Length: 186
Image (cartoon, rainbow, N blue to C red):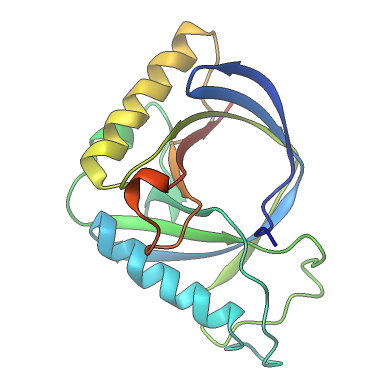
C-alpha cells in the first residue's frame, strides 16, 4: 500500500525538472526557529505527534507525503526576490508541513493539542520541481534551489514564493533510494 500524496498532473518534463498542476489540499504546519536540519526534526515530531493522536479527540490520522520545509521570516514566507531564498544558513525560522489526507476538511480535522500547529487550505496551483535522490542536507538543497530558479527563468516561469524542500521517504531509507524535491509555486 502506498502513502497518500496530493494529486497532480505533470504538464512538462525536462530531465529532473517538471511543471505540475496540483489539486487543492490542506496542510498542518508549524514554524520552528533553529538550523535547517534541527528545524525539520523538531517540526516533524510536533506534527507526527498530532497525527498520532495528540489532538482533542485522540484521532490517529494516516501519514502522507511529502513533508515540506521552507524558510520563513517573522511567520511569513520570504518573497522569491529576497536573496535569502538560496543563501539562508544557520539558525532561522523554518515552516514544516504535513499534507493532510484528502478525506479531511478544515471542519473535520481534530484540533491539535499543540497550539503552535495550524492548518492552511491550499487551492489548485502550479509548481515547478527539481527531483533528486540522496540525502537532503542544506548545501545540496541550496544548490537544487539555485538550479530550479535558473531553470524557471530559462523557461519563462516567474516564482510566486520561496522554494521549499519536499521529502518523500522515512529516514531509514538508504540515501540513493530517497525521493526529494525542491519546489516553487509560479
